[in-house]
Structure formats: C-alpha cells, structure tokens
Length: 120
Image (cartoon, rainbow, N blue to C red):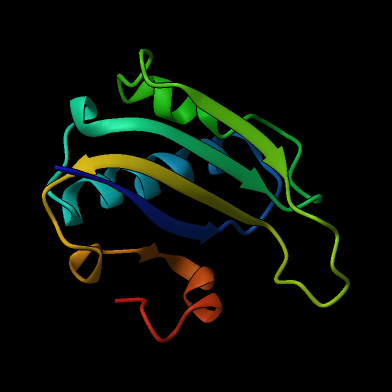
C-alpha cells in the first residue's frame, strides 16, 4: 500500500448551505467510488472553498457520509481575481495499492473547466 493524494473539485450555483452540502457529498462519494476506496482507506481530507462560499463547512458533508473518524479540515482558497467562482475543492490523502498514474482525480459540474486534461 502507498499513500496517495487525490484531488477533486465541484462548483455550486449559489452560496446556499444545502447546495454546498449536496455538492460536497457528491464529490466525496465520487472520489471514493472511482478510486474503489472505503472510509477505512482515508487518512485525511483537506477541503477548500472560494471566498464567496461561507454558508457551511464542506467537512460537515463528509461527516454526514459517515466519515466522522477521518481527520477533516476546511480552509479558504486565495482570492485570485480571475478564479472560477463558487468552487469547493478537496485533497484526500488515502492508503491505496493503486499506482499514482491510476489515481482518479474528480472534477464535477462547472469545475471540469479547472482540469479538462484529467476530468472525466
């Protein structure tokens, strides 16, 4: 097994608590599914949100998925003027047998524009 970092991002239409939680749950679930992971494989997850998203902590969505024993942290992205708005990002550190080249990074909704080279 190796420790790998998996990136992901999604975009919401508005700074709405329910929308932030729904989009974050979708993002976390998709990262786990595409990489064939369970909660036991997670070491930690760092969530970030663009400065225009303040209605809820994205980590709450991971707790709602049953990841309460995984170390979670939230932070704000730097306010770059030309950045895509209303974006939630994550970096999950996982224990996996997959080689780095086989890790599936996940970009959903409007965040596909961030990494068209690896978004599916």
